[in-house]
Image 1 (tube, helix red, strand yellow):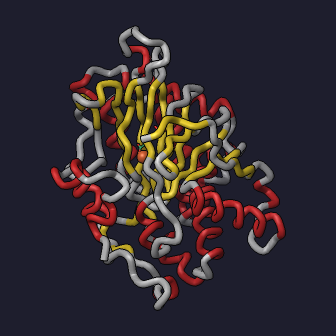
Image 2 (image 1 turned 90 degrees about the vertical axis):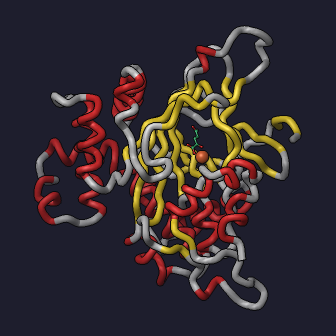
Length: 350
Ligand SMILES: O=C(O)CCC(=O)C(=O)O
Ligand SMILES: [Fe+2]
């Protein structure tokens, strides 16, 4: 494939979020920008200042801390579900390691993750845990949590960290649905929401010295199977997306997030959006930490394009599929040998 070009993925500024309400001119203009960026690139940089800097730093410092645990501890982050647990020790990807909190919307899942690393409890982690828990509760309007939100502590946590990323995910889904005239399908999309939260480390510091310009593979080319991925990183860049055979660096500023469209949206929009092939190429010397918030459909829920997306001009492109089936397929022999841009079609193409 051709080499990296100095093309930039679009940047969309959501920093005046308090004015960003449906049916306002600002909403209408952002909604078009979002849709066009996802159509053209399958991703964009979101400038989003709702997560305070110190909270973000706190989260990255937890990330660093958990990767320093012995391998035997990290291996306790297991799951029978594909991509739902520890990934690492992959011979072709020696720099890559990741840990996953599956089903973030379920507080028990967060608790078992924390227990792996801090069986006695951890102030740090519980702080972030509570941020997520309270934020999710607000999103899902759980009465008992709403009561707890009245404490300044919880309110601050919600405002400062976790709520914003889930709000961003929801807002983007609303914008995309509106753009396609699928406003009446938004509830079914949001009700099936299931979140995977992944901490990732790329050990750039372990790349052997050699040609300074040489980069090493952090993560191979793939598409994400979910609806949206919201990625934050420490100050080390490395993510690239493939556009028409060329790799484009996705270099983002410190308070930005990368938003990527996944295969689930490709199917739901019957091909009007696409999921870009992306990879991580690591520079020598620096370790990269990234955090992914993946929004999926609940296991067992079948994803299919609403009937409005299918007509004579737009015949159905994908059979209904279930996310765990897709993720499992990626881990099979057929999945490994199919080029990443064809994998989704190979799995459920009509
Ligand atoms: O680390 C990143 O920036 C991207 C990671 C990624 O693409 C993934 O985990 O699916
Ligand atoms: Fe990815």
